[in-house]
Amino acid sequence: MSYANPAAYERFMGRWSARLAPAFLRFGRVRDGQHVLDVGCGTGVLSRAIISSGATVRVTGVDPSAEYLSFAARGAPSERVRFLAGSAEALPFPNGAFDAALALLVLQDFDEPERAVREMARITRPDDVVAACIWDFARGLPMLSLLKQAAETLVPDVSVTGSQRQHAGLEDLGALWSECGLHDVVTETFEIGMAFASFEDYWQPVLGRSTPTSAMVARVDEQTGGALARLLREKIGSMQPDGSFVLPARAFAVRGLVR
Image 1 (cartoon, rainbow, N blue to C red):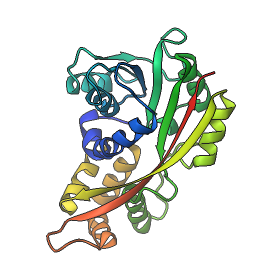
Image 2: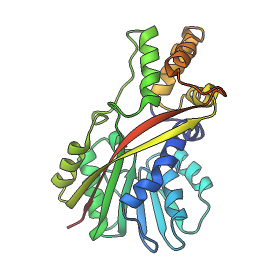
Image 3: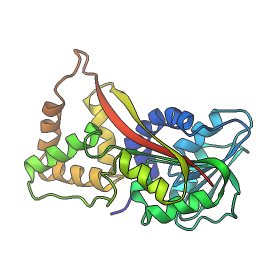
Image 4: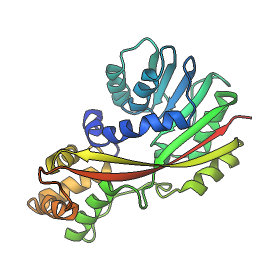
């Protein structure tokens, strides 16, 4: 199963992306007046953040999914943004067409990450920024790891297909950027927290089955008569008297300049 249903994905993961986007834009040194490429734009979270960051900044979002592009366009009705179909590994733009190229939380999903980074560098002007940000999937995303742990407790042989680069760390990202010919490479770690009003606020978006992980979890919960949701509530544990709680998250970012 691939990523499906952009509206459901926006409810499940979009709020995390929106929470992270402002810090990533600062890290990526996005400035007003620039024309920025949002690679793997998905539902348009980063594109919306870019447009909101200045009065004259422009953004082009690229994604292979027509359904996601349509959703992104509806959410960003601005003459300063456009969305086009395209692959990160073969961007449909001439050399040096953009002032910056950014990829938020999608690098791990690219079929050929190195080729994608080289393409991002190709379409960016010399001495301008190419940057990406990914979750610390290994240890920094309890929102997902709790789901997987609960599913594996109930169905030990359950599995979900992961990305070859989903456990990339800061050193891996820095090395990739250097290997792709970028200079002045810098990496950074972001720590954020997401507040949930209740367990249902956390759980209901999972049932939208918008990703391979959420689809697997929802299927296990259905097969076990709701046992997964009950176990997950116990694992979260540290809720406030009103039922609210906060989950942390960690992301890794890298930027470099085009030669």
